[in-house]
Amino acid sequence: MKRFLLLWAFVALTACRVERVVEDPVVECNRTKSVTVVRIAALRDSTVVDLELRNLPGNWVRLSSRTVLRGGTTGEESPLLRADEFPLDEKVTLNRTGLRRVRLVFGAVSRHDSTVDLLEPDGYRIEGIRLEAVRRPAGKLRCRIEGEVVDRPQSSLLLLYAFTESGSQMSDPEALIPIREGRFTYDLDLDTPDYYQLVFADEEMRGSFLPVGFIADACGVRMTLYPEDEGLERNRIGGGALNDELDGYQARLRRLSEPYGRAMDSLYRISAAFIPEAQRLVDCMADRSISAERRREASRRYMQLFRSGEAYGPEFRRLMAGQQTAQRRYLDSLLAGEPTLPRLVLLAEAIVRKRGEAYKPLFEQRYATAFADHPLVRFCAERLAAETVREGMPYVDFSAPDLDGKERRVSELVAGKRLFLLDFWASWCGPCRRSAMALIPIYGQYADRGFTVVGIARERHSTDAMRRAVEKDGYPWINLVELDDRGGLWARYGRYGAAGFQVLVDGEGRILRFDPEPDELRRLLSERLTR
Image (cartoon, rainbow, N blue to C red):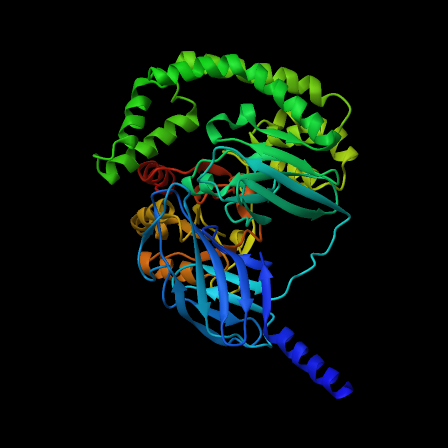
């Protein structure tokens, strides 16, 4: 009997090591929001991975037959054997849900691997898929986020961001929260109550999204979320005194804005919101029968008008000013009261909307003291510092590695130059690269007269794509790299969500222009470098 029990224990232990099944496994890094792992089963003779593939309804998804699993410890690769009821290497159009579930069967992975990477050639990478259930380390408090989604068949995933990270294109979500049968649940561990936002993945794919903000604390939060066009009015967010307080403030701000919003919407409906030139540009950008180059030119000109405040007509500007005044008066009275976390949230949102300068004394004297160690205070301080970076002010000097990994300081690279241009770009940003290539002939003409360019590429995870872009585009100047926003360089210039921008600086280190057009740049160089 004893011998039998020992044999049974050995068989059971061996089976446990080989046969591992995990629902919603923990993933260290998912570099795409269009593919998520629902289940993984590491069996003796195969590994079964259940995926959710998503895109906008009517768009397509595709899986390569060359997709592999790679062991996190051994590095051994398990080939894809088959996909159940899914055609590999073909475009599969999605229905109105924008979701397709698929089961992939790979070869067996080694029992020595506790994680695997799911790798598609030239496609998505999901790294560190845990082959055992993981007990997440608990912070000082746990917030349960749960809710239901109404009338959104196209929404199958929510992205969770800390507010302090949500403005950066490099920021990965804190979590990917699946929506199943219209419901979602997630346990968030954190050290202190903080402000978070949920974003529907399908809205982010479309490039226009309405974040759902809430304060995470031990009380948890319960939500009912509606479609984007009616979310502000109908969304319900409850859970604890902090969220109740914040919801009351936000409801008051919405009521103050409503009459102005209705009037502005009526101007949009009759095409009277913009000045005639801006309206023609808007119509041109929307007309797919017009060439892509003409639409890009219309977009550039429209952005010039928008940034200068000249795009809207006088009546629309009057309504905007009235709305801002009504909100500002309420915020002024509110923020002047006792500092609370919900009021700090409103202050942080005002600073994000470039209204921080007026609130800087109040922030420094009261909120920075009351919440000295809170992430929102550090966030606000960084944003306020970035607001001082403008034309006529000193540029922000910094160090960043070049493609050989050597740290280089901008001030040393431009020493002795009469003018220089900082070109912030990214390999994945087409407009950035076109703007950089337009600099090449200008650089060639003025490089020996005291002008230079320093490029800084904002890259994700590796420099591989950047190296290919530099070689293909042929930039003759040095390029530095900002990998995963480690240096916070975009934030230092107040360009949090931007892919790229340019800064022209004089020999004394003062900013002359942001984003000069090529003709304007040539004029400035000609005027200043021929004296």
